[in-house]
Image (cartoon, rainbow, N blue to C red):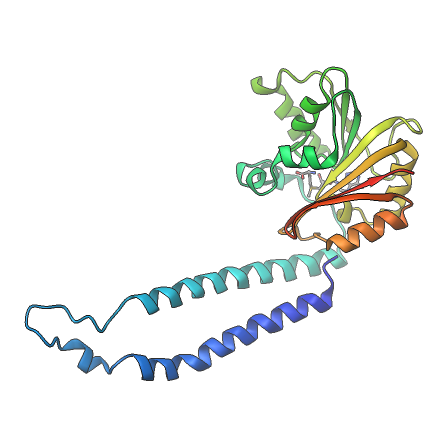
Length: 271
Ligand SMILES: C[S@@+](CC[C@H](N)C(=O)[O-])C[C@H]1O[C@@H](n2cnc3c(N)ncnc32)[C@H](O)[C@@H]1O
């Protein structure tokens, strides 16, 4: 989870920035702009008065909009994080369309996640928490005809959406994808049977992550990969250090961290 300490610091900083802008404004206005009466009179008849330059106003408005966006983002994060701290529940199925939308794929592109995960043709791959299938079809195409992808989710409402997606004409080329209803706590796979397991904005949603990692270790082959991807607007987003620590505590070896603060993938290997 996003540490509460950092969240409070962020809020305090934002409030301080606002307070500074507000306290400076009257002083600045006094210094930079003449009184309204003076500004209204043009020195030359028929010519526009250039003293009312629109630039400072525009810049101020730009920063105002930026700060408003930041405020909305912080309020959204605080409310949802507090809610999710006390009430554990999987992301509701009605957000399936948002998860599998163009805007989502632009912020967290599928080919990037495939590349970072280390997925290759011929692999037996499991996606835990596939949701509406935003990334599943890309992984299935990468695994190809010689591989196999299992898309597992705990919610029937999400599985219905991925099923519908697979029935669409543009996905008829995918023949090696299997939808599985199940939980991360009891993966319906043989011991050491999978090459790669990946989760996209799922890991922190699982209340008992140590238990899930134990299952991941059981079903992965030796040197099999676990790839965990996270995206910042997700209310469960953790710092990369948290993900790395949890994976290591779960008995996996850290192989690589790719991406940035907003959108990263951590790749582990089963020793
Ligand atoms: C935020 S959604 C992400 C869906 C998809 N990975 C994506 O990025 O679009 C999280 C998904 O994890 C699933 N999930 C949560 N807890 C789970 C568990 N214990 N076992 C399996 N799936 C789970 C939820 O049902 C939900 O579909």
